[in-house]
Amino acid sequence: MNSKSRIKFRHILALGLLGSLCMVILLGITWYFNSSPGFMSEEIIKIDRGSTLRETAEMLKSRNLITSENFFIVLARISGNTSVKTGKYRIYSGMSSLDILQRITRGHVMVQRVTIPEGFNLYQIADRLESEGITSEDSFLYYALDENYLRSIGIHAPSAEGYLFPETYNFPEDSDARDIIQWMHNQMRKELEGMDLSSMANLNMNVHKLLTMASLIEEEATVKKERDLISAVFHNRLKLGMRLYCDPTVRYAVKKFTGRLTYKDLESDSPFNTYRHGGYPPTPISSPGRGAIQAALNPADVSYLYFVSRNDGSHYFSKTLSRHNKAVEYYQKGINNGFVDRQK
Image (cartoon, rainbow, N blue to C red):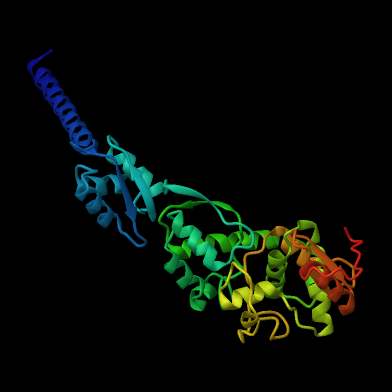
């Protein structure tokens, strides 16, 4: 090898060594800034709606969860993960910046399994969600009664009552109430899309009336097999121009969801009081489930107009007021008037 070749070889070797050295330095810097900071401890963080990547990086640095906010931002841009997801996250001690970045951009939020029972109204749902750490009661009720917000998600009604499907959900903890309302409403829409709604026209119902009727049935029918009978009573009354005389609507009117109703309660002039006002109440009075909605769509083919509780959850059904009054005397007043219950 001549002198010129040797010089060229040494030059190439030097460049190679320099490149390798730069690579080692770069890897070292990357390793250092990607590593968890000293004395890092497990933390629960919350990323609010509208938070930017930089705001999130600053918050993580202030909580001693990342080594460098600038490195975190560069890492996000290089990986193409710059959109942080709203929610509550658990960050474990020892997690790298990349681990944290992937968690908050993929939306691996903390979740809570919550059951919203059939027949829960907005106030009961709000209380359940707050007690489970999902969202605040006040915020939920504010948006559930905000007609402008409701219209934006496809609910054209005075409130979200009846439009939120009762189900067991895995909700992100500490969520925005608007997200929860939309999530539950989307589930109701899916349920309705999977049903045969063709009978609505013959029953003179639209979706709002359907959900309202279903909520009345949900509240009255403790025994599931009676749903279609109670549906028939309400539909029959409406056809004849009778008032619905539904006790749960009075409860909703006076916001008295437990205990006995009084004569004063029955005198409430609220439009929800179906003892005072004819037709449907303005909105549903609770969240109906599948069974109640199906019953509202498919009332039994009977001519009953009345029913009274047997005090065991079941009801006795009557076609005439005189027969109904005898059943009321027997079951509600304890008067032995020769009444015989052949429906048992």
